[in-house]
Length: 339
Ligand SMILES: C[S@@+](CC[C@H](N)C(=O)[O-])C[C@H]1O[C@@H](n2cnc3c(N)ncnc32)[C@H](O)[C@@H]1O
Figure 1 (cartoon, protein in one colour):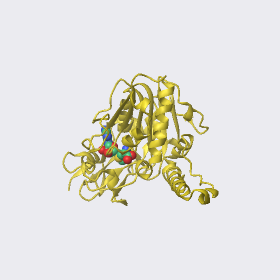
Figure 2 (tube, rainbow, N blue to C red):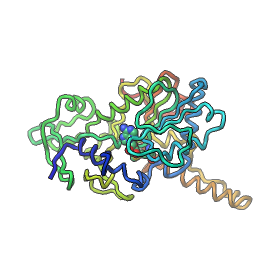
Figure 3 (cartoon, rainbow, N blue to C red):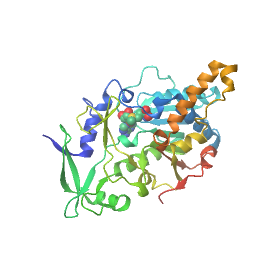
Figure 4 (cartoon, helix red, strand yellow):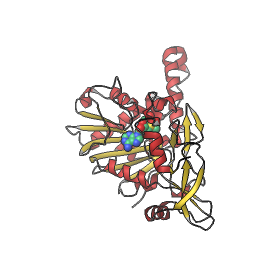
């Protein structure tokens, strides 16, 4: 038996150079479906957002598109396919990924790196990245002391370990108060830190994190840490055989920024032209092929914006030294978080 706190256990299970889950050749798409895999409409919407950011930046000589947690480069490839030549000529595309070599077939203009670039201007987009950033779990014991949860890396069995350190205690007090015995906390500070560092890479631009998340008003009562293997939800065992993911405290991630806005994926994608409206029935008789294509697209759009599924994801957007792009600024549901 090897007992560890969850954060190092996740780090090892997901990213160890040998045996790490994300090093497997099949990649994330072999185990679960993100918005990127669900439909090319997602990449089209992100491309539209990039054009909007380009306009808000005054069409700079060099425009960056930075895909963080790029998986096997699917979103990057999809976005490049949607952009007009005039923009492609000025574009600096980056795929940032720590667990995979440059994918075969990635357009040659794209840079593949394991570090977020610094000093660039454009759009930084992270789809389902932060939920895979390892974190510790805590639970309040019978005496009211918040302790780290330790896990047996072979079986996933858990026990309580030492009292949490001052930094995690402060994070919990600010973002996830846990007053009662049995209360749990997923300590989000490592996510806050990597996001702040990624956003700091933007000289000017928009940073968007799309992920399953919660804010202070909706903290889950039970741990959200979950395992996925081959399309199924499984017990989270940190042994390298399954994904390990926990929802993101998006308000804590957003906190240091001034222009920090948050909405649902449903709202954001609708603003970017993705909607699940069915094509008019008349099209079925005038152009049956076009009708079927449009019907397929409507089904995919419905999946991406489903309020009980992908549409419930949070989109956190931070504008760095630029106005919030027009397409997104008009969304009624946006709130300013943090400060
Ligand atoms: C759930 S997958 C999402 C892949 C892709 N964005 C998508 O939506 O299909 C998360 C990815 O983030 C990568 N990742 C985790 N931490 C990272 C980091 N610090 N820098 C770059 N990539 C990271 C993982 O290796 C994994 O490929």
